[in-house]
Length: 290
Image (tube, rainbow, N blue to C red):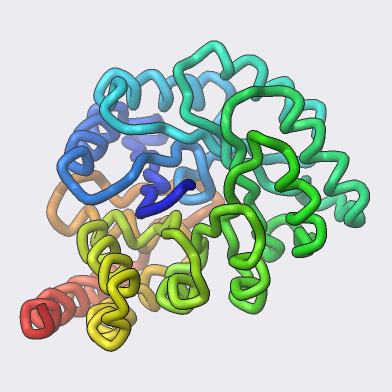
Protein backbone atom coordinates (compact mmCIF):
# COMPACT_ATOMS: atom_id res chain seq x y z
CA UNK A 1 0.00 0.00 0.00
CA UNK A 2 1.30 3.43 -0.96
CA UNK A 3 0.44 5.78 1.87
CA UNK A 4 1.34 8.90 3.78
CA UNK A 5 2.54 12.30 2.66
CA UNK A 6 4.64 12.48 -0.50
CA UNK A 7 6.49 15.69 -1.26
CA UNK A 8 6.35 16.84 -4.93
CA UNK A 9 9.56 18.77 -4.49
CA UNK A 10 10.02 22.09 -6.29
CA UNK A 11 12.95 22.77 -8.60
CA UNK A 12 14.77 25.91 -7.40
CA UNK A 13 16.24 28.25 -10.00
CA UNK A 14 18.92 30.93 -9.83
CA UNK A 15 19.46 33.27 -12.78
CA UNK A 16 17.57 30.90 -15.03
CA UNK A 17 19.53 27.78 -14.09
CA UNK A 18 18.66 24.85 -11.82
CA UNK A 19 19.98 25.76 -8.36
CA UNK A 20 21.31 22.39 -7.21
CA UNK A 21 22.68 23.76 -3.93
CA UNK A 22 19.25 25.05 -2.95
CA UNK A 23 17.62 21.82 -4.10
CA UNK A 24 19.91 19.76 -1.91
CA UNK A 25 19.36 22.01 1.11
CA UNK A 26 15.64 21.65 0.57
CA UNK A 27 15.79 17.86 0.29
CA UNK A 28 17.89 17.62 3.46
CA UNK A 29 15.30 19.68 5.31
CA UNK A 30 12.51 17.19 4.60
CA UNK A 31 14.44 14.07 5.51
CA UNK A 32 13.64 14.82 9.15
CA UNK A 33 9.94 15.47 8.53
CA UNK A 34 6.94 13.15 8.35
CA UNK A 35 7.01 12.30 4.66
CA UNK A 36 6.90 8.87 3.04
CA UNK A 37 9.01 9.93 0.09
CA UNK A 38 9.72 12.47 -2.63
CA UNK A 39 8.14 12.96 -6.02
CA UNK A 40 10.74 14.53 -8.30
CA UNK A 41 10.04 16.17 -11.65
CA UNK A 42 6.32 16.53 -11.13
CA UNK A 43 4.06 19.45 -11.91
CA UNK A 44 5.26 21.32 -8.82
CA UNK A 45 8.83 20.67 -9.95
CA UNK A 46 8.15 22.48 -13.25
CA UNK A 47 9.28 19.36 -15.06
CA UNK A 48 7.55 20.31 -18.31
CA UNK A 49 9.87 23.34 -18.51
CA UNK A 50 13.10 21.38 -17.95
CA UNK A 51 15.15 19.87 -20.73
CA UNK A 52 16.51 16.32 -20.60
CA UNK A 53 19.84 17.31 -19.07
CA UNK A 54 18.21 19.49 -16.43
CA UNK A 55 15.95 16.60 -15.44
CA UNK A 56 18.98 14.36 -14.95
CA UNK A 57 20.72 17.14 -13.03
CA UNK A 58 17.77 17.34 -10.63
CA UNK A 59 17.77 13.58 -10.07
CA UNK A 60 21.52 13.37 -9.49
CA UNK A 61 21.36 16.22 -6.99
CA UNK A 62 18.51 14.60 -5.10
CA UNK A 63 20.09 11.16 -4.94
CA UNK A 64 23.34 12.65 -3.64
CA UNK A 65 21.43 13.86 -0.59
CA UNK A 66 18.64 11.32 -0.19
CA UNK A 67 20.50 8.15 -1.13
CA UNK A 68 18.43 5.24 0.09
CA UNK A 69 16.99 7.03 3.12
CA UNK A 70 13.65 7.73 1.45
CA UNK A 71 11.96 6.65 -1.77
CA UNK A 72 12.13 8.90 -4.81
CA UNK A 73 9.30 8.59 -7.33
CA UNK A 74 9.83 10.31 -10.68
CA UNK A 75 7.13 12.15 -12.61
CA UNK A 76 6.66 11.17 -16.26
CA UNK A 77 4.46 13.27 -18.53
CA UNK A 78 3.97 14.38 -22.10
CA UNK A 79 1.88 13.70 -25.19
CA UNK A 80 3.63 10.75 -26.82
CA UNK A 81 3.37 7.39 -25.05
CA UNK A 82 6.45 6.08 -26.86
CA UNK A 83 8.59 8.96 -25.63
CA UNK A 84 7.32 8.49 -22.09
CA UNK A 85 8.05 4.75 -22.20
CA UNK A 86 11.54 5.44 -23.54
CA UNK A 87 12.23 7.83 -20.66
CA UNK A 88 11.08 5.21 -18.16
CA UNK A 89 13.40 2.61 -19.71
CA UNK A 90 16.34 5.02 -19.49
CA UNK A 91 15.58 5.97 -15.89
CA UNK A 92 15.10 2.34 -14.87
CA UNK A 93 18.89 2.12 -14.58
CA UNK A 94 18.63 4.41 -11.56
CA UNK A 95 17.58 3.32 -8.07
CA UNK A 96 14.15 4.86 -8.52
CA UNK A 97 11.22 3.89 -6.31
CA UNK A 98 8.63 4.19 -9.05
CA UNK A 99 6.96 6.50 -11.53
CA UNK A 100 4.07 8.96 -11.35
CA UNK A 101 2.61 8.87 -14.86
CA UNK A 102 -0.12 11.03 -16.33
CA UNK A 103 -2.43 10.28 -19.22
CA UNK A 104 -1.18 11.74 -22.51
CA UNK A 105 -1.72 15.51 -22.55
CA UNK A 106 -3.43 17.53 -25.27
CA UNK A 107 -4.18 14.67 -27.66
CA UNK A 108 -7.24 13.63 -25.59
CA UNK A 109 -7.45 9.85 -26.19
CA UNK A 110 -10.61 7.96 -25.27
CA UNK A 111 -10.63 5.39 -22.45
CA UNK A 112 -9.38 2.61 -24.74
CA UNK A 113 -6.44 4.82 -25.67
CA UNK A 114 -5.76 5.64 -22.03
CA UNK A 115 -5.77 1.94 -21.16
CA UNK A 116 -3.34 1.23 -24.01
CA UNK A 117 -1.11 4.06 -22.79
CA UNK A 118 -0.85 2.72 -19.24
CA UNK A 119 -0.57 -0.89 -20.42
CA UNK A 120 2.54 0.18 -22.33
CA UNK A 121 3.89 2.01 -19.29
CA UNK A 122 3.30 -0.97 -17.00
CA UNK A 123 5.04 -3.32 -19.40
CA UNK A 124 8.05 -1.00 -19.71
CA UNK A 125 9.12 -1.37 -16.07
CA UNK A 126 8.87 -3.68 -13.09
CA UNK A 127 8.93 -0.71 -10.74
CA UNK A 128 5.73 0.63 -9.12
CA UNK A 129 3.57 2.95 -11.22
CA UNK A 130 1.25 5.60 -9.79
CA UNK A 131 -1.48 6.77 -12.15
CA UNK A 132 -1.90 10.55 -12.28
CA UNK A 133 -5.44 11.69 -13.01
CA UNK A 134 -5.16 15.43 -13.63
CA UNK A 135 -7.70 16.32 -16.34
CA UNK A 136 -7.34 20.10 -15.97
CA UNK A 137 -3.79 19.66 -17.32
CA UNK A 138 -4.07 16.69 -19.66
CA UNK A 139 -7.54 17.34 -21.06
CA UNK A 140 -8.76 13.81 -20.26
CA UNK A 141 -9.96 11.97 -17.16
CA UNK A 142 -9.06 8.41 -16.23
CA UNK A 143 -12.47 6.82 -15.60
CA UNK A 144 -12.88 4.69 -12.50
CA UNK A 145 -13.68 1.66 -14.70
CA UNK A 146 -10.38 2.23 -16.48
CA UNK A 147 -8.56 2.46 -13.15
CA UNK A 148 -10.13 -0.83 -12.06
CA UNK A 149 -8.89 -2.51 -15.24
CA UNK A 150 -5.40 -1.01 -14.90
CA UNK A 151 -5.13 -2.12 -11.28
CA UNK A 152 -4.89 -5.69 -12.63
CA UNK A 153 -1.26 -4.88 -13.47
CA UNK A 154 0.82 -5.97 -10.48
CA UNK A 155 2.97 -2.83 -10.64
CA UNK A 156 0.16 -0.26 -10.97
CA UNK A 157 -0.21 0.32 -7.27
CA UNK A 158 -1.78 3.74 -6.70
CA UNK A 159 -3.47 6.75 -8.23
CA UNK A 160 -2.90 10.43 -7.58
CA UNK A 161 -6.49 11.63 -7.78
CA UNK A 162 -7.26 15.27 -8.53
CA UNK A 163 -11.04 14.98 -9.07
CA UNK A 164 -12.81 14.94 -5.68
CA UNK A 165 -16.00 13.54 -7.19
CA UNK A 166 -14.12 10.29 -7.91
CA UNK A 167 -12.63 9.77 -4.43
CA UNK A 168 -15.37 7.52 -3.06
CA UNK A 169 -15.46 5.15 -6.04
CA UNK A 170 -11.68 5.01 -6.34
CA UNK A 171 -11.33 4.10 -2.67
CA UNK A 172 -13.45 1.00 -3.30
CA UNK A 173 -10.92 -0.32 -5.82
CA UNK A 174 -7.83 -2.47 -5.06
CA UNK A 175 -5.48 0.47 -5.47
CA UNK A 176 -4.07 3.11 -3.10
CA UNK A 177 -5.62 6.56 -3.52
CA UNK A 178 -3.40 9.58 -2.93
CA UNK A 179 -5.01 12.99 -2.95
CA UNK A 180 -3.62 15.40 -5.54
CA UNK A 181 -5.79 18.40 -4.65
CA UNK A 182 -4.50 20.10 -1.51
CA UNK A 183 -7.84 21.68 -0.65
CA UNK A 184 -9.62 18.30 -0.87
CA UNK A 185 -7.12 16.35 1.24
CA UNK A 186 -9.41 15.80 4.23
CA UNK A 187 -12.30 14.72 2.00
CA UNK A 188 -10.04 12.17 0.33
CA UNK A 189 -8.91 10.72 3.66
CA UNK A 190 -12.49 10.48 4.93
CA UNK A 191 -13.44 8.64 1.72
CA UNK A 192 -10.69 6.10 2.45
CA UNK A 193 -7.67 7.64 0.77
CA UNK A 194 -4.25 6.57 1.99
CA UNK A 195 -2.45 9.93 1.85
CA UNK A 196 -1.52 12.64 -0.60
CA UNK A 197 1.01 14.09 -3.00
CA UNK A 198 0.60 17.68 -1.91
CA UNK A 199 2.35 20.94 -2.75
CA UNK A 200 1.48 22.28 0.71
CA UNK A 201 3.64 19.53 2.25
CA UNK A 202 6.55 21.91 1.62
CA UNK A 203 5.09 23.99 4.46
CA UNK A 204 3.02 21.55 6.51
CA UNK A 205 4.35 18.02 6.07
CA UNK A 206 4.11 17.13 9.74
CA UNK A 207 0.66 18.71 10.12
CA UNK A 208 -0.69 16.86 7.08
CA UNK A 209 0.68 13.61 8.51
CA UNK A 210 -1.01 14.38 11.84
CA UNK A 211 -4.32 15.00 10.06
CA UNK A 212 -3.99 11.57 8.47
CA UNK A 213 -3.29 9.94 11.83
CA UNK A 214 -6.33 11.59 13.40
CA UNK A 215 -8.60 10.40 10.61
CA UNK A 216 -7.23 6.86 10.97
CA UNK A 217 -7.96 6.97 14.71
CA UNK A 218 -11.52 8.21 14.10
CA UNK A 219 -10.78 11.71 15.41
CA UNK A 220 -12.22 13.40 12.34
CA UNK A 221 -13.31 16.54 14.18
CA UNK A 222 -9.76 17.05 15.46
CA UNK A 223 -8.41 16.49 11.95
CA UNK A 224 -10.87 19.04 10.58
CA UNK A 225 -9.72 21.65 13.11
CA UNK A 226 -6.13 21.23 11.93
CA UNK A 227 -7.14 21.36 8.28
CA UNK A 228 -9.22 24.51 8.76
CA UNK A 229 -6.09 26.27 9.98
CA UNK A 230 -4.29 25.39 6.73
CA UNK A 231 -7.04 26.39 4.30
CA UNK A 232 -6.26 30.13 3.98
CA UNK A 233 -2.64 29.36 3.11
CA UNK A 234 -3.59 26.59 0.69
CA UNK A 235 -5.97 28.96 -1.08
CA UNK A 236 -3.17 31.51 -1.51
CA UNK A 237 -0.70 28.88 -2.73
CA UNK A 238 -2.96 28.17 -5.69
CA UNK A 239 -4.10 31.73 -6.36
CA UNK A 240 -1.23 31.93 -8.86
CA UNK A 241 0.02 29.20 -11.22
CA UNK A 242 1.75 26.42 -9.29
CA UNK A 243 4.51 26.49 -8.02
CA UNK A 244 4.96 30.26 -7.79
CA UNK A 245 2.99 30.42 -4.53
CA UNK A 246 4.88 27.71 -2.68
CA UNK A 247 8.23 29.00 -3.92
CA UNK A 248 7.36 32.45 -2.58
CA UNK A 249 6.39 30.91 0.76
CA UNK A 250 9.65 28.96 0.98
CA UNK A 251 11.62 32.08 0.07
CA UNK A 252 10.20 33.88 3.11
CA UNK A 253 12.66 32.02 5.35
CA UNK A 254 15.44 31.92 2.77
CA UNK A 255 15.36 28.21 2.03
CA UNK A 256 15.24 28.83 -1.73
CA UNK A 257 14.64 31.77 -4.01
CA UNK A 258 11.18 32.49 -5.41
CA UNK A 259 12.31 32.36 -9.05
CA UNK A 260 10.16 30.33 -11.45
CA UNK A 261 10.72 29.46 -15.09
CA UNK A 262 8.82 31.46 -17.67
CA UNK A 263 6.10 31.41 -18.76
CA UNK A 264 5.23 30.64 -15.13
CA UNK A 265 5.58 34.03 -13.51
CA UNK A 266 7.15 34.61 -10.12
CA UNK A 267 4.68 35.46 -7.34
CA UNK A 268 3.76 39.12 -7.09
CA UNK A 269 4.86 41.30 -4.20
CA UNK A 270 1.23 41.36 -3.09
CA UNK A 271 0.97 37.57 -2.96
CA UNK A 272 4.26 37.30 -1.08
CA UNK A 273 2.97 39.66 1.60
CA UNK A 274 -0.37 37.86 1.77
CA UNK A 275 1.46 34.58 2.28
CA UNK A 276 3.61 36.02 5.03
CA UNK A 277 0.55 37.24 6.93
CA UNK A 278 -1.43 34.04 6.32
CA UNK A 279 1.42 31.79 7.44
CA UNK A 280 1.87 33.74 10.68
CA UNK A 281 -1.86 33.43 11.38
CA UNK A 282 -1.85 29.74 10.43
CA UNK A 283 0.94 28.79 12.81
CA UNK A 284 -0.76 30.71 15.65
CA UNK A 285 -3.99 28.82 14.97
CA UNK A 286 -2.20 25.47 14.84
CA UNK A 287 -0.69 26.17 18.24
CA UNK A 288 -4.21 26.66 19.62
CA UNK A 289 -5.77 23.49 18.16
CA UNK A 290 -2.76 21.22 18.82
